Image 1 (cartoon, rainbow, N blue to C red):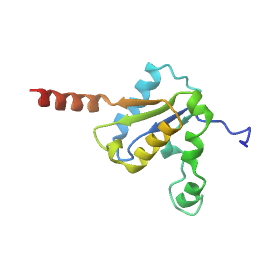
Image 2: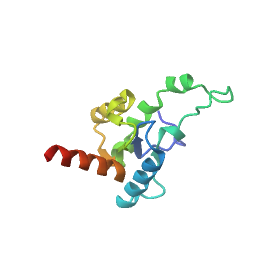
Image 3: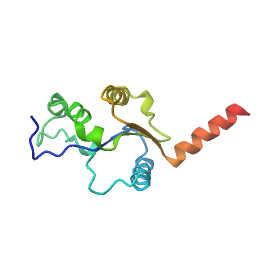
Length: 136
């Protein structure tokens, strides 16, 4: 049973941890504005969901992972009823080469979560130029 004081996430952002922060932020802002996602939306973005300093003041990363936070988020009804999963593509850090990102997307598909592919303007330009070179 879920604690009634816990709020379910409505949107999960999947990203490569080595992606460019400025591009990722711009993608988030554009997506939220374009799709009319309200400021009150509950968003799971893992850099803000884990205590990572490993300074003995909080739980270790290993202790947190034992609680299976991703599984709890992706399986919650809020994600399926809400905005689903947004997969962020930037010019650095390819989500398709990161096993954890692949795991997240595979799990989302199994849970029948809507998946949205989001691309930074820079990534879109890079991809377009590659396709144009291929077609020439």
